[in-house]
Image 1 (spheres, rainbow, N blue to C red):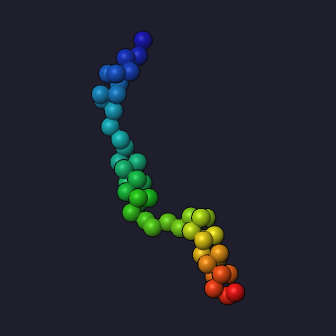
Image 2 (tube, rainbow, N blue to C red):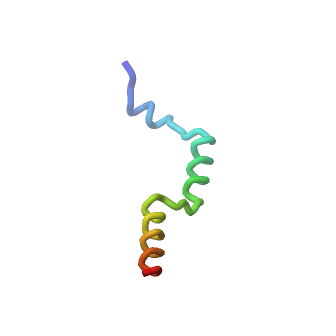
Image 3 (cartoon, helix red, strand yellow):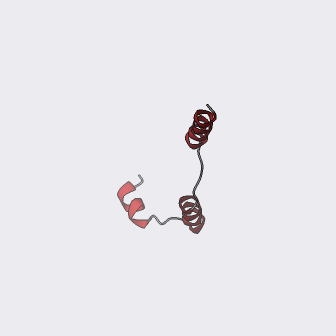
Length: 47
């Protein structure tokens, strides 16, 4: 039987996962809400 507690103690992230996390967190990503807010603000300014 697998000892999950023991397996978790031995767990380490792969380098690729850490690199991906750093790249994702370091970027200022625009999401759909930001785009919709910008469109709404532009429409309000135009009248």
